[in-house]
Length: 509
Image (cartoon, rainbow, N blue to C red; front, side):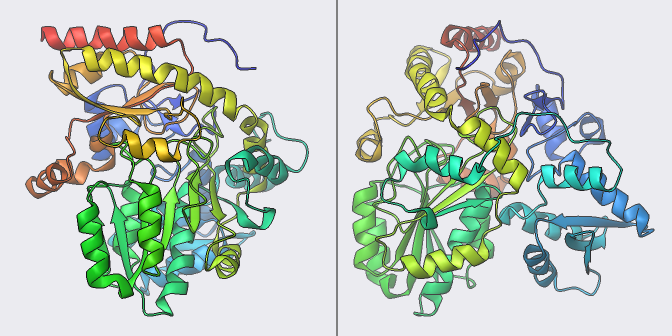
């Protein structure tokens, strides 16, 4: 059973992990000044960061291991980038394609070394971030213990049996037609997306199909994969309005023989818009393209996508690891899909598997996923109702927003399904509101802990801070001041009270 919530929200200091665990996936950014400092790498902010979202802020154990190796090798002015495997280290090395980058393997570890403050370092980090290729935090912790740097691993509850089997058992209701060989547990959600993209792209390139369609404004690393890893200019096409059937039909009429696949989220992050999935699947299949659907926002238990997709991907960091201290991902092949055998083989060779201790930690939590989801989804409509009626709130986005509610209903597993996420725009100064909210504030979603973040400021700070970028956001219907709320399992009245209090403060000026 879930533990009852024990009190009102209290402020969490800058940089402290959320939750207060060594492997927490979120960190506290309590003011907009902190958010800006985090994005701009301001030393006054960064020195407070005990942790951060793992693919953006290298985990302390991974950093500690890298520093230990750098000292052993007497590196000066260089930085060690630890990859999850030899294969991924090879990919980073090939991607950098520079004599200034050094490939290494030692102590069972693999990675590259680059000059510390250099374009190569930026590119290495970005590649590992986009592909989900960093060494896992628990793998680094185990290595530090093995090397005698740490005395022991952090005490935590782990699954005692076959963790992968338990994870598949708990996910089976979401994919009733899939067999064990169709499930791929990955190091994180982005590695699932990247691996699925690579698997489909390889099959389709052999048929002369290299164009990829991005449907909707998607998560930033998913967009980056489509921009950076397609075959070149003109091979990434974005249709940002998920309801624009005419644009999709026109695109397929003009380029159908060249389109490799469509990638979208159901719903999208952060506008929580759902395309008409059955219609989209029929269009894609009619033209010989393939469809990758990301179920992260609503969870695999919230939306039934496999009958429509060639591959369904999801971040199991959300909902499945509801305590907020594991990163993990999932890719599931539709066994009835046209390329199913080839996609299985490609994923088996290409995914970065979930590290065993990460899997054991996930397996210890995933059995509570249906209960966590039910408690969250019982609260979401009540919070939406409050926000939609409040004069200081201009607009609310959620799974059942009028423009895409019918499309969401076509794939929702239950009438109550909503997922945890909602976003909203304000009629009051965003910074005043954000600074006043007593809710936990940081990245990620799908935890038992409620989380608020200024999502566009965090995910697309480069766009927010340039005139051209703000124009790009506006064209996609995105306000730079958009608030994203991940509803947790705390009492709904306390979540509403915290938001109401901050709206009142912001309204008073």
